[in-house]
Image (cartoon, rainbow, N blue to C red; front, side, top):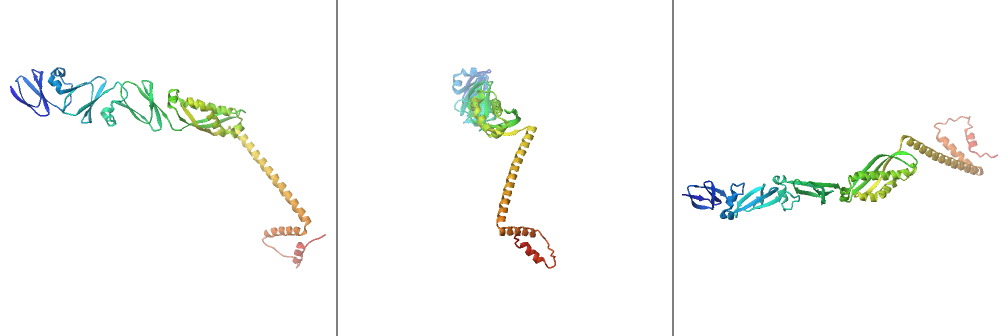
Length: 367
């Protein structure tokens, strides 16, 4: 026999001829010469321990330890004194009771939702992130969650975490902001067979993500076709002149025509209208000629009106001057003044008879 000491914080596993014999606590004890003693720390977690099943048959050993079974398709998160330490993969583990504040969170990886109440900081640890899949829904989006192809629920803005496993998870998202659709260069015939191209816009927003994403495939493409057809319907019932005069009303027509149809797509039309009407070259030239002719006719009308007014004014002035000799002389002096204003130099001749000539000009002549 020999005396053996087990230090505080450890226990001793005694084997005899290589087989488990007993467990001894801290202190001094006598061992036989054919026995071996191995010490183990009491604050350590042990896994893949040989002959654990045999050791558990010992009541004293079984009373001193806690056994953790991690099954296939499971993991266990180990916490010591409230702090995350490691991840335990499938297997059998044991630790000594009462010596360390060890806790475990066993996770079934066969499910999707994370319901174990694990802190977000732990989920974001690199060791745990390997078992996590994340989906983000931006502040201006709304998402639909599908598990194995089946719709589960709506997702508002935020980041969502799920356990990683063979189960398929998909998140469809819709932009909930006001969006704009451009319909450019649409070649359309008016009621009077005038071929033209129209640039049209429509502003819309998604109001029901379930209807838009679940009940419809490519709802935006469907909305594009509906707007296109409504635009053609409006233009096809108008002559070119009517279209150009009433192009501001096409937006309201399209909005009214699509109100019920857009609701079936989960959207609503907020605003719409024609941006440009592009005429063919020959039609544009003809319209320019018509416009020029109209403006020339307006100019001629104004010119004739002014000429008539001027002639009438001259006639009235002549009648007044005929009846009033003083008015005639004043008009005559007015014209002399205008003529004199344009004369830069005057040469006087006439052998001293200039004053008589001027007097004759401004003197009254009565016959």
